[in-house]
Amino acid sequence: MPTRALPSIVKSTSSTLAHTCNQQMEFPLDIMAVIFGYYISGEKDIYTALILAHVCRHWRKAAHSLSVLWKDIYLDTSPSHRELSLSIGNSGIKSSFLPNQFSPLDLCIEIPRGISRLLQWTSLKSLSIRNATQGHFKVCIPGGAYVNSLESLYLCGLDGLRLPQLCSLRTLVLSGSKKRIPLQEVSVFLRGLPRLRTLELHGTPISFTTAQSISIISTLLQSEDLPCLTSVRIFGLRSSREPTKRYLGHLLAFLSPISTVSYLQVEAGNEVLELTTVLRPLCPLRNFSNLRSVTFRLIKPCHRDLRGLLNALACSSHAILWLSSYMEYTIQLRPAESLAGLPVPGGRPLLAHVEFLFATEEGLQEFLNVAAARTCGLRNVRASPATLQELCAAGRWSMAPMDPHTCNKKEEHKTQSQHWHAHITCAGDEGNKLCLVPVLEPLHR
Image (cartoon, rainbow, N blue to C red):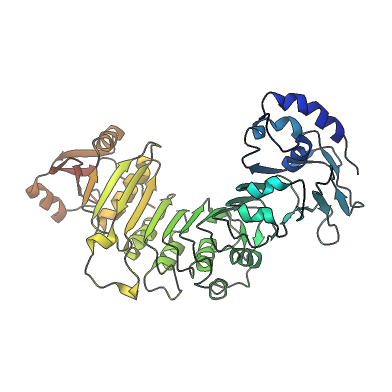
């Protein structure tokens, strides 16, 4: 076994961790050293790492002190070593190198079943695997008793995924950009998650090929798959640097047949048009038939695309505006409430909640300009006193008591410099309406 300093690390770290770890912790430090860190030395002795972080009852306190272990375990990654094993006692944790199937630096972590000294795996609730290497990385975990307790799984930077059915998994996070998991492997894995409730996608972790059209992608998952999935969150898309055209459209088409999804959150910029296409009531795809709430963080969208999205969502003329503790503006619209009793196009129920998030006053101003300029656009905004104070302090709006005669004149003589006019009321004083008018001209694209 070509490991260096492995015996010494157990000896040196036992005293180091003694005062920080729980004295009743049953898991040996040597086993923890193997599980928590694989540091690989290349030809130029440059360290790359796979960080494998576990959160469970016995390891919670020890995890804060494991940094002293990470730089003392080395593995030989030369192509001549087809399979290297780290065996401490009867642990049987294995690190396998498969140069025939992948490149010489491809690494595959395997945790075999039936490990007698890993009884604590049965209490494992959360697992995070991050590929910090420059090479390819594939995760393979066979079925075992410890898998049945896993509720949260975070996978970052992988380009391969072979996992068993995880019957207890409730939260799955896939993250990546340069390295991606093939679509077919993702679809197979998702079908083995009967209790999954939340799916988060950060960046572009799934690989779509040019041969995979929207019509093909939308058939990989069936409506009965993922019967408990209710929430889908998508973050970090950047179309300008994305080699796959219309990545968001492919992604939403892949997930849209899942009939149980009721909440969708998307962070998007140039992809607003793709978002509109999928969420339009008359879309030919079987798209999110039970979707009730959506949240969008739009990054400098085109005004025309934003107007199309508001039309597709049947957004109403009334909205609620507030400033969260994170200094982020939120506008909430309720189409189902304002359009109750009207026929629904396409047969899909109207959305109960539509939220738009804005980090700056400029983004909020541009949204209000587009939303209020629509034919049936935004006319009344309800805000808290603190939010009104922040709006006035931003210097982008002027507010004055509403004068119906003056308001009608503004609507009749609307010019290029006066694009919209809305009323705002303060929570707790709804009878006192104010005219909300932009002071500075929004940017046009």
